[in-house]
Image (cartoon, rainbow, N blue to C red; front, side, top):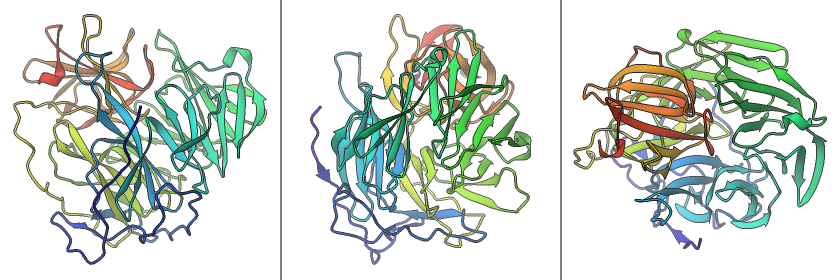
Length: 492
């Protein structure tokens, strides 16, 4: 699909007056004459903040207006963001306007936005020379400066860079790619070859280990842990777990249950009840060695509030203060910035960037929206930052929104949780009954963040995106009913 390269007419300058809303135009990185996709991108990594306010992220930076950002990957030098964002495209395949993930490079000092392709799950190599992503035609692509240099035959979307070596699954083989050279590291047992998306597989942060997750239509989930260099696999005994995720670095595995979380690193297991923390949403610290848990204030307007997160597995009084952003939430690798989406309307968002460790108060003042939402008779907020891939048809009962595995799903409106658990085809679901008599449900989730009987607010996190049930990839099936009659949630 042809695309046009364009540059945003915004340049970061330190002397411009700061706009309203506690924003500042100071650039994250000094401006340069380089293009944001020129290889190789080697620059000294800025010194990360330290001290008690290192994870206090309250200083808002001014960015070009980029709507509906779903995922963000930071270049090693912190200058360039590889972003995938939702773009509406008319299609003859689906009635109405479906949406796709477009992948672009955003140069922070200049505001230049350069198209890279159509895909998701983007990752930089450690030097910044290469960018890998999963295209929507099911290919793993390795690019330099937006130009494809190789297409390794990966069969699972999850890959992992260690240095400038890429690790990936290729049917029964575990392979690595280094500067165009492919090496087979090991083979998987014949009965454990993952087939995506019925199965999923992921590498640890150092790519030395992996987990294969096998989903069954009866709701059973089986997990297997393996060693990359040998292909040896053992059963991972986690019968009640709903969600697992590797830390960004090392070999720490997060395991979520309905009532607690575990951090597993070899034989060492740290367990903590969810009730001990201010909220159920998890966030890795920038170094990938610790987990934060806390709330995300419901997002029902363009206002930005700040939430307090506590660290798992430590008695030290180290807290994080984070903006209540959605979608591509996360720290830059050096811990100097926190990115995500704020709402610009009920069903649209824009990319935001906050600086961390600047001495701000842990009780930060909320930032009011620059302007009120456009008037509308609609009330439901979009439950996830993702792309619509299927609308309601005589054989399809809801709206499908593709979104990254593990991303946050929110309640479309105020209500009471009426159902949490497994159903045939739909997998794990969370349903909310509203005062209007409408019940909205989200299906194919991994971890529920609420229980039956909980009162929830519009925009409050209620679940994480998963692969349970019958799926073609991680997505949310968003369904609305009145007395079991299907209605279109997009019209509410």
